[in-house]
Image 1 (cartoon, rainbow, N blue to C red):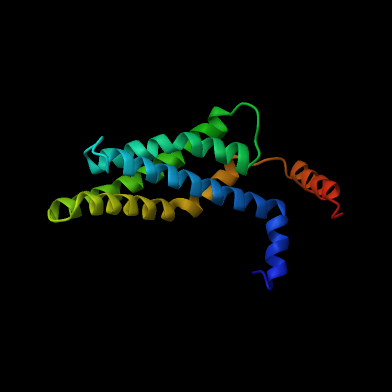
Image 2: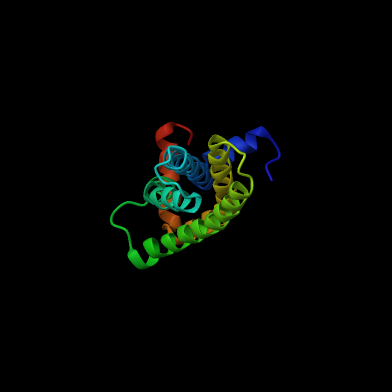
Length: 170
């Protein structure tokens, strides 16, 4: 546990701190992306079903999520390794989508049970349930992605030290 503001600042400049911050910002971006798709396709009556709209939005969000996590958060470049990276990433992402689908069924039940709600309220409920569902999976996914996108620790330390040298902090 950081004891002071300075400890937090120091941690945020470390390799692990930077990675967690990038992962968090990538998650915020892809969450906003999937939420926007839900508001467009469900709120705009393009996809009328709660579950279908949720599935569509979350499946579509896998694409930017994978690239942000792999290339930006974990700083991996080159081609992806299907067995070690893509398949485990898809498995975790699809698990999160399955969980959000359960939430979508709950939202669908509430919407159909209470016919007097406006479509705007229904859309907000669907988006909120989707957000909560993914919040539950966030930490678990971070731990798994850290494992599948692992990089060479010595190379990471060397890169961090090199960054410090170039910034004049060494």
